[in-house]
Image (cartoon, rainbow, N blue to C red; front, top):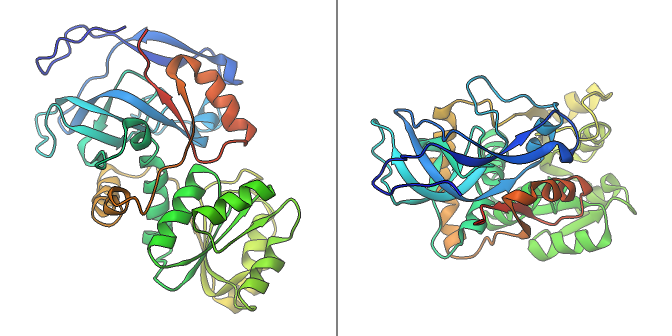
Length: 342
């Protein structure tokens, strides 16, 4: 266990973190000791209690998703914990504050340095484990569905992978914001879970064609916004069930990055096809997202109109099992790593 003398400074600069022997399978990960990260002028240093596991972590471990320049090479994009040091230019946080944060990397560790603007208070009533499941998913959903696609009250949303961390967040948030929400999932059980979370209807894609179902459910109108993490052949299907003036937002391409599309449908329906990656965006952009989340979304978490859905909590030392579960696709909601005592 690393040692900290609590006078606002870290005196013994070692910590546990997850390292990778070589890119590849989950078994390449192991816990080792190394230096505690430096807290730069605009950073806060967080003592991590728990960190979320996300699909980009798996891709980075496999060597398919390189960290941006100057980002920590350590896995982990979201954490919850306690501020133990602040940079000289930070005025928004103090030592002792309980925060959850969107990291640029480095979350699978006992300590992580995070730009101050990417931190949010742990919502009242939530545990650190619950709070660790929030940043990556809600930053992603807010920036893509509300900032980029401009989903409005009364419009409709289709989210693929409705029981993923992103899907669970999107269903609950968009439902709370007054949208009509549809989802897809790959089993009857997962589809039922999506509907329990607030989807008007979830299509079991192992049994049904989602285009046919969505067009029937919307009386041929189609949906206004589609949030897609599948890619591949789903893109043309998304276009087929999109309403006129719809916005199709791609945030991942698990089925593949290349496919054929019918341009005439895009032209005829006046569609907007867009997408984004969160991690490479600037600190200022992420700080703006954080500010809007604090104002618009955090009250919904405090009131429990949105409830974090945690599938499984593992100790940091069991990171291999956590990644195996992520890759299996059997989870519903978030997988979280907890920094357990030795």
